[in-house]
Image 1 (spheres, rainbow, N blue to C red):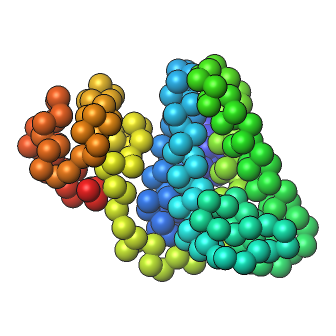
Image 2: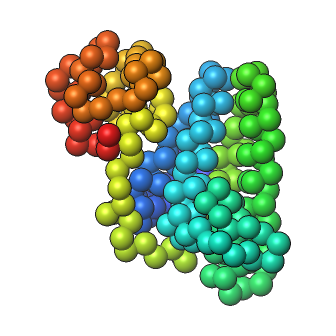
Length: 218
């Protein structure tokens, strides 16, 4: 028998896939990596979490030059933009307060978790911290789902292969982690992957290259 969170996660993943497939996949990848027993993978998952939150913010509350109160709403203030969306979209004062508090908590947790990973100490992101954090993300999205309306989300640009995380490369291309690492090493050394040099990566042949051209931008 499934527990309550499994049911919640399934419902959120399914609805978010309809609304914004890019954001949904990033959220699912984050969940997978945050539950890893490998500390380094949990740390790397933070990049995917941030990309998800920014994708979500761009979809529901595009960056603006003005402020909402004292909160800036620029390109990198994605937490503030999600907070602003909830402030404007949720009518119930109690639900609004709970949702905005949760967004602020997530923003604070991102900052604290990144302080640890920026030191290069992967163990700073414990398994317990990771699980609690991704639970908070799913609960926040649960608040949002009734208010999301993204008719053009399926037409959003594809993820650029030079911006894809290790988890995204592995999952979206269906390749081993070793090959995904080779792709990242290659793009660092060469300054960027193109559709013409991808097959020069160790372990990448024509089949994987053709698949990448259909999935990613270059």
